[in-house]
Image (tube, rainbow, N blue to C red; front, top):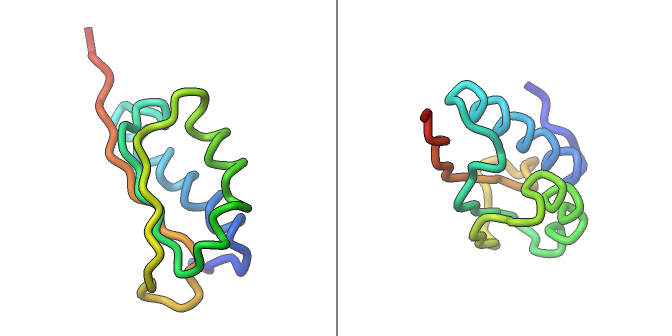
Length: 89
């Protein structure tokens, strides 16, 4: 799988993978209660903000942005989420 060069494209791809995984579990991005953004360059967070605001809506989850190296130098953002499954009843 190719990694896009642009941080915004990487963010969009990460959110799509997360949304797909959540769907398989019976949840959506609206069920995310905690998110961690890990970026090698903190300046790359601002360009991603519009996508993140759109993904998580008006009631965003608790969030932390960490500036740290990632395993592959081509990676510009990593996103981890914790979600609560919706009540089946």
